[in-house]
Image: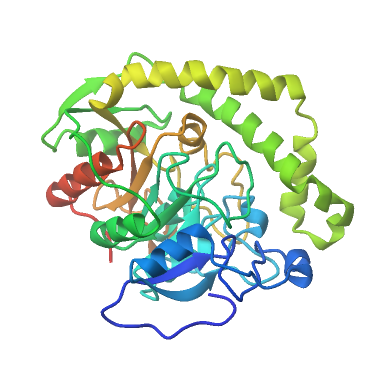
Length: 376
């Protein structure tokens, strides 16, 4: 955590807040030394923080992140990189790295993060905790710095489903609706990971369906176009002082300048068609999807390439659907990541249609009962 830290309160729902959301009296740095130097303390809490306080949660303080929340690696050269509790030589994942690590270490029951292309689910997967990205637009984002507004979502991380549900309700979420009747596996492109997902879904009490073809890579391509174009609109002005920014983010922003307005409009127009297709595939909420969160091992900090770490998460930001990452006792040891200090548990991703977060938590609970979860 960074900035002033309130004492942990046993018996309360202790929460840490990604330093992208305003806390009254604190500077919101967005993980950037440039912003931190210029910003004034927030005059009021962001909507999510205000709701948490009203629910009785205890806000401990701010958690670190990737600069501007613009990256999946979790590394921050200015304020320090949170240490992955599974193994210190692995990346913590981002951009909500501090929120995931604080939860994994027991410094808080709930970590509040944001998820634009996987930034709650990826650090949850890297650190072996639960991460929920709600339906786009259901959580009020007033007082949260934007990255790509049509994709941005405020989400929560926790060590168990009970705390995750409490955190989701605390930021303004609602858990209700019908149960899912079937589950379908989305091929990831890696047979090792798909085999694990197949073994998991075969053990729960839901009918297992087969998708005619997921088109996940097409969604990823269009989602990337939207993310980069909108991020450049939000952050492009900072390129005038690129020497004061994280070089990784600068490289991505400059690559975004190659995306034309026509390409962006096309990706936005195809989103409506894609949503209709996937809503039909899921019978408007009868079914849910299962796939890996990351179809690969968690990279090492010394030398990493995270260019496609969000290939299986960003598509559901693009569609706006809710998605949940759960750490499970499944798969070959070390498949999800092996560091000098330990292994990363397999991270399963569940996806539902709009406002069906309750479905995800119910199925996750069933999976935990029959397979076993690795929540702390």
